[in-house]
Each structure stands twice: as structure tokens, then as C-alpha cells.
Image (cartoon, rainbow, N blue to C red; front, side, top):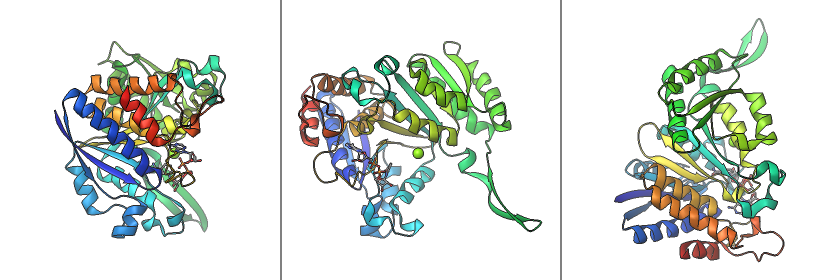
Length: 355
Ligand code: NAI
Ligand code: MG
């Protein structure tokens, strides 16, 4: 088929890793007979420098007209002292809101060939293949009222954890649909022993589960989930949870394998194109040195093929190529272990292309 891909490289290694991902997409295009049209847009610090705003209207227009968006990373020391509305990270928050990106998906997969990079024992981490599905546009981070109040001369701060029924339904349904294509298990994480919003979350999850008799549902309290992720991460397939719980658990889970440069993500839209980006940032310490690990960006592109374009065979081919190259001992500096020569970003991309 024919697909339009908006590419927002952003800052720092965002440029290097998206370039790598595009090369892999071009290889897939040729090999499987598709047509990918790449349209480039500015975001983050690069956009501030050239357009005076972290998310220019042109960029948003390119994204809206695309079938999917591939993003690198934003930020860097150059803009760290800017006021809030001129910070690169503001561009990310804005694009999530503007594009209605309600579901953040972060797969965490363990690679046998990377045993030494995990902080956990091999027996605990081996075979881990889980997916965190975080609600991204509701909950504690968006509920009103939020702010400072003065009552009886006393200053207080308030944040509100609020969910509409439909918001819970769509994220939970997404999680079940994803689980159906995986190990068919959903762990819904909440704090139902304390929070009313969690009790409603549980009720709705039970209702949605009726439509997925082939998928096993379990509920887990968030404090226990935080512990179980370290104690026995192999028990999980799909974890679905509200915004703040998901923020914390997804960062925790991302460290299980110990390799930031390997972790892709997707943010699914409720209304238009979805967005794909590596979990890592712009890595100013290694930017422009041809050292960055492109695998997180390449696996993000694979998620795009699978989830936005329905190209499962093509996504499998990319993921297999990554696995083979790792198994053959190829390593960028961030994942290099004893006995490996660290290769450059470009060498890594070329080897993955060649599989
Ligand atoms: P970071 O993820 O950029 O870097 C953390 C460490 O991991 C650094 O030592 C870096 O060299 C290394 N690293 C990250 N990705 C790598 C890769 N692909 N290959 C090899 N090594 C890699 O996080 P940091 O340093 O906290 O933030 C740097 C900038 O990135 C900040 O401006 C921050 O706001 C921004 N940031 C942006 C994100 C995004 O665009 N989604 C996410 C996280 C941070
Ligand atoms: Mg976070």
C-alpha cells in the first residue's frame, strides 16, 4: 500500500536515530513493494530556533495529513533556561493534546543476547515480554480543579483524579485488543481499596472483559504491581492503567532490561494518526557523534508498521532483523559488553538493513 509518514526528528540524537529508522522503512518499502512518502517537520528546540515556537502550525498540519508520525526526541541544554512556553518539551505535550493521543504503549522485551545489561538476575528477567498501556489524556494530570486555594486563611493545593466512563472504556478496550494478539492476559492496575475512580475503573474493566472471553483479566493494586515488576516480571503480558500510575510503572518497567537505547513506544490517537517514538531523550552527551543506538527508533517504526498500517509481516521482518543482529554480537556503545567492538549508529543501521 501507500502511506504518508510525518517525520519529526527534533533535537540531538533524534536526528541520527530517525535517519536510521527511515533507512529501515525504505528497505521494507522496496522489499515488500509499498510506497512510503516522508514529510519532515520541526519540533522542540529545532523549531524554537527556526520558528520561535516548539510546535509550529506547519508541523501540526503535516502530522494531521499523515497516516502516522515518527518522532525522534526533543530537548537539550541550549534551551534549558527558556521560559515554559519556549521549552522543547512543551512541543511534545502540545502534540499529544492536539492529536488526541490517549494511549501510550511501551513494550519491554528482554533479549537473550543482552543478559548483562539488566540490573536483575538472569532467571528473573529471561523471557520478559510485556506491554504497558498507559492512559495519557485523563486522570490526575488533567482533572479539574487543580491549583492552589486558600480556605480559612490556610493555603492548600488540590489535584483531581477524574475519569469519564468513555475514557476508561476506550483505553481498556485497546489493552484487550492488544492482548488478543499477544499472550492473552490483561493485568489492570488500580488502587481500588482507596480510590473511587479505581473502583469505577474495575467495574468498567470487568464489563469490557465480557467481550474478550479468550483473554484472562486480573486486577492488581498499584503498590503491589510496582513490587511484582521487580520480583517476577515474567508474569505480565499487557498491563493497563491510568495516567499517573502508568507514568511511574512504565519508567520502572523500562529499566528492567537496562537498555534505554532499545525501547520503542507508540501513542495511539482516538481520532487520527498515531505517533511513534523511542522512549529515550535527545542524549546531548553523545549527540552528533554517530554513537547513538538506533534500535529504539527502528523498533518504533516497526510498531508503526504493525499498529497504524496493519503490516504485521513487515513489522516481524524488522524485529527479526534486530534480533539477529544482536545475536550476531553487534553492539552500539550503550549495550556493548566485554568482547564486543562497539559499532556506530550507521554501521548498526546497515547491518539491520542487510538481514
Ligand atoms: P536521555 O534519554 O536523553 O539520556 C540519558 C542517558 O542515556 C544519556 O547518557 C544518553 O547518552 C543515554 N542514551 C539515551 N538514548 C540513547 C541511545 N539511543 N543510544 C545510546 N545512549 C543513549 O535523557 P536525559 O539525559 O535525561 O535528557 C536529555 C534531554 O532529552 C533533555 O532535554 C530531556 O528533557 C530530553 N528528553 C526528551 C524526551 C523525548 O523527547 N521524548 C524523553 C526524555 C528526555
Ligand atoms: Mg515519565
